[in-house]
Each structure stands twice: as C-alpha cells, then as structure tokens.
Amino acid sequence: MSSSRPEAQQLRRSLKARHMYMIAIGGSIGTGLFVASGATVANAGPGGALLAYALIGFMVFLLMQSLGEMATYIPLAGSFGEYARRFVSPSFGFAIGWNYWYNWAITVAAELAAAALVMKYWAPNTPGWIWSAIFLAILFGLNALSARAYGEGEFWFALIKVAVVIFFLILGVLMIFGILGGPSPGFSNWTLSNGKQSAPFVNGAAGVLGVFMIAGFSFQGTELVAVAAGEAEDPDRNVPKAIRTVFIRILLFYIGAIAVIGFLIPFTDPRLLDSAEDNIAVAPFTLVFDNAGVLAAAAIMNAVILTSILSAGNSGLYASTRMLYALAESGQAPKLFSKLNSRGVPIPALIATTAIGALCFISSLIGDGAAYTWLINASGLAGFITWMGIAWCHYKFRRAFLAQGHSVDELPFKAIFFPLGPIVALLMCAFIVAGQNLEVYTGNIDLGTLISAYVGLPLFLALWWGHKLVTKAPKVDPMEADLSRL
Image (tube, helix red, strand yellow):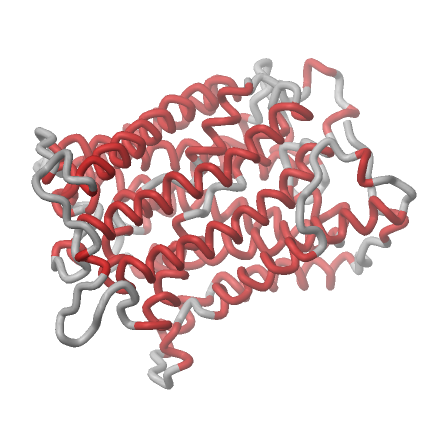
C-alpha cells in the first residue's frame, strides 16, 4: 500500500525482534488472567476451566498460524483489514478495518476507566478522571514519538507481566509439592465436593461453556503482532519467530496458571467469585502470593494489573491508529488520516483515535453509563468478528496463491493444518459469538440484555452490506487477487 510513497514518507520498520516477541507474548496477558481466572475456576472447577482455556488456546494457535502465513508474506500496517480487501471483497475489507478500529478505540476508553479504578487502591480520594487523563497523555506521548517508542513501552510493560507470571508459576509448583507455604494440597482440590457439585468439572458442560466465552475474551490481543508486522525489521524472519511463541505462551502462561490455581485454591473458596479490578486483595494471584508468604502481595498485584491495563491501552492506541491509517491509504477513510510526520507516525489518525477513546470514556461518567456499557459490548464482539475475518481471509489467500500458479514452498511461513485450521477456527469463533447470551437458549430472555450482547454483530453487517450497496463492489476472483508484496 505505502510502497508508492517516497521512503521518507512511509511507516518506519523500527520494531526490532525483541519488540515483536513481547508484543506477541504480552498481547493477551492481562486482567483476564490475573483477576478473572478465579471466577472461571469457581464456576467450572479446575478441570472445566483448564479444558475451556485449552480449547480456546488451540483455536488461537490456529488463528495465529493463519495470520502468520499472511503477515509474513505481506507485512502491512493494515494487516487483516487489507487482506480482507485483497482476498475477499472491498466491502468485507472496509467492514473488517472499521470494525477493528472501533474495537480498539473503545478498548482504550475501557482501559482508562479500569486504570482509574485500580488507582483507588493508592489514592482513594483523588477523582478517577484525573488518573485517566494522565494515563491517556502518557499513552498518546508514547505513540506520538515513534513506532519504536510504542514498541519499547510495550516491551517493558509485557516484560513485567511475563516476569510476574513466571514467578507465580515457580511459587505455585513449589507449593504444590509442599516445598513452600505449608503441606502440599495434593489432588484434594480436584476431587472436592460442596454437596451439590464436585470437582474437577463443576456445573458440567454449562460451566465449561460459560468459561469458554470468558477465555475467548482473555485471549483477545494476540493478533496485534500482525498489525505491528508493517513496522517490523526483517518481517520474513521476525514475524514467524514471534508467531511461534504464541503456542508456548498459551501452554505455559494460561494453562499453567489455571492448573496452579486449581491445585492451590478450592473452587468453593468464596473469594474467587469476589475478585474484581477494584478488589485485588482476593484475586487468585494475590491469594497464592499471600499463602506463599510474599510481603505486600496485594500492592504488588495492583501495580502489575495497572501495568497490564496501560499495556492494553498502549497497544489499543497503536493498533487502532495503524488501522485508520491503512483505511485512509486504501481510500476507505478520509485521506487526511494517511498523513505521516517526519518520524513516520500517522499523527492525524492518532489524534482522531485518542479523541474517540476520550469521548467514549467521558460517556462512562455521564448518567448511568448505559451508553458506555453498549460501547464495551460492541467492542467485545468486534474482536471475535475480527478473528473470524482472519480465518476466512487466510482460506481465500491460500486459494488465490495456488490459483495464480504459486507453490506453498514460496511462503516464508506455512500454516499447519490448512485447510482444516482456518475452518475449525472460524467455526469455533462463530460458536462463541452465538453463545454471547446463553439465556437465549434456556428460554430466559431479557430483550435489553440480548440486544446489548449482540449489538456488535449488526454494526459489522451494516458496515459490510452498506458499503456493498453503495459501491456495488464485487467479491474478489482468486485469479485477480492482489498478491503483491512490498
């Protein structure tokens, strides 16, 4: 896309290998792991939580394989938005691009609200909006400096998260074997019963299904490495390496952490259901650290969770800015947003995205916050729609690649399990989208909750079909798909 520009007016490939590794590793580590993991064990039991996270982990692994193949061959800032335009249809690309942009722009607002909640731990009397404004200014500054500044910020944010998870896993294993924190619990928490339900599978299939949805949200952000590929040094080498770390991260961090929590904290512990972003003292990580004798465990975890929130906000601002830039480059957004400054940063796109994030945050402070709740629900579903789009784009990319006489051996990175991989990932994502509101299938329907849960879907379809209605753009013929690199 940007290859027609003079080199001085292009995005800079300034993200080094270490930045790409941490963007890939840190993309999905956040409050979903540090806090929400407690409720998953309480609702589904240790076995149910482990199964749900393993299934979602496998799905994300398949998606990253698909994304890795495309992002290595065609590393673009617009990533899957541009792939959708090239391999499916201009209208689908338009919808995927704008869908992803508002997904992360709204997520920035959510992280600002969460940061204000976390800061109450240290400064309960300071208005939360002040902290949100300070953090937004910091994130804007990091992104305005350069892609390298974003990468450096994300590197250190992610490094802190990774270090804490590794420390947690080491302590957890020592406690499971009785080396630290008193006698070993053994497998007692995996066979525990409260008289109504028994571990390891609490609430049966319904418990696993409920956690399945939560786990899906927890993994959102893993696709960020493909957005960053457009500004990565030597993408042929660094993007595949970053993609391959996804499986290790899934296996070690999420599966390992859920297993440790399942061994050390009984699903009957009421504190697991009480954990929330403003009550870090009962988050599962804090409980394990407390039992291991770690001093000031709640303060440490509060700082780590704040880091996770800033990391998500930093990445969200970067991803949505680059997507808006890519939309403008392809003529699907005002041309103003394709302008770059002397450091290769799309400042107009950054300013617009920051303003939308700030306005969405302000909506959470007005009235009962109902508008904000709807925005967050739309954003959550948008992530799964993006994943479905990635799987479909990969299927169409490979078809076009072979139809135009290319060999799979030409690909710098080859997705395993094709064509089954993207098809399975697409179906699993569709299952999650359909299950957003489980009450629909039990006959206990609340119309307001139902509409709120699925509001992201009609928004996406309106973008897709609206563009098609206006432009009459046909779907892409595999023989005519644009496979040009850079």
